[in-house]
Image 1 (cartoon, rainbow, N blue to C red):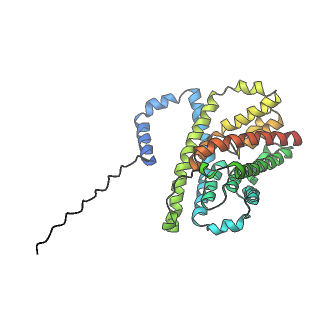
Image 2: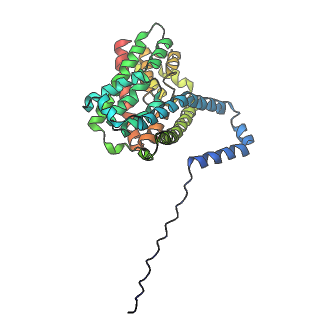
Image 3: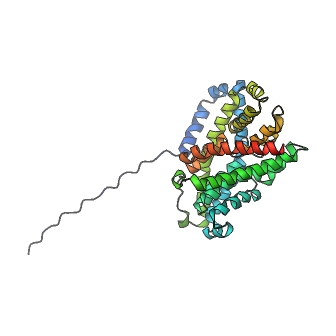
Amino acid sequence: MERVALPEAPQTVAPKRRRRIGSLEVLAAALVVLVLFRGPLGGLVSGQRAQTWTTVFVSVLVQAAPFLVFGVVLSAVIAVFVPRAFWAKALPRHPALAVPAAGLAGVVLPGCECGSVPIAGSLIRRGVTPAAALAFLLAAPAINPIVLTATVVAFPGRPEMAIGRGVASLFVAVAMGWLWMRLGRDEWIKLPHRPDLDDLSRGRAFWSACRHDILHAGGFLVAGAAAAATINVFVPGAWLQSVAGQPVISVIGLALLAVLLSICSEADAFVAASLSQFSLTSRLVFLVVGPMVDLKLIAMQTGVFGRRFAFRFAPATLVAAIVVGAGFGAVLL
């Protein structure tokens, strides 16, 4: 019997995977450019404005970097070592009660806003309701003991400044958490893809989470610091003098200044104390707004939660912080 040759199955050729240019390649190229053109680039930063820009840029990064690292490490610990069941036991089951509980948790985590962003993202990954994670994100940088102690030291004889800052900040954080429960949508939060950590050993998973978060949050921190430095250079100091004598405009002016300056929450009380031409109420608004909404925070929130989230959440938080801060200032100060 004659055998019939069957046609061979066509061999599928796997498409070639294009190598994408990553952050490591960009960093290497930037270093090569800096080395090759160090002479001309050095001349560009010799002017007074350029030196001011460089000083502000570096100071923002130096202030924020330790707390960003702290937040990234704690975020990785939460992602790898803390079981999901822990959060179900630690926070109230009802989301409306979990929001203030998460806000109060900021008291026990001393750090600045740069660390709270990756921590909040990790909390959402571990199953914490977004409203509670966002309340923690806003409250932790403003109500922790280090920030409140710095506020007391910066305003001697004025303990009501620290009290007003802590209470008003917690009030805004809880209110924004509840507002998210009412109006927020899950599709507005788009966390960047993180490699599946469950398939790795704990040690490798920990370092993988750290590398992932530091690349996303750190890059946007640099962008935010550059924007803050640019604003510091080009905003004339005479503008501050012109708005200080007008109550409503001074409150709004210092709120916007807090957004633009992007000062770490551990240091902003001393800056507020130096703005003696402004009222205590407007300076309290400065202290409430700063840890919740500034350029570097908006940039980092964009990197961690996505643009749709940041462009909705940041303006709403700014309005709430101005209204609540001014209200508490009118009552306490």
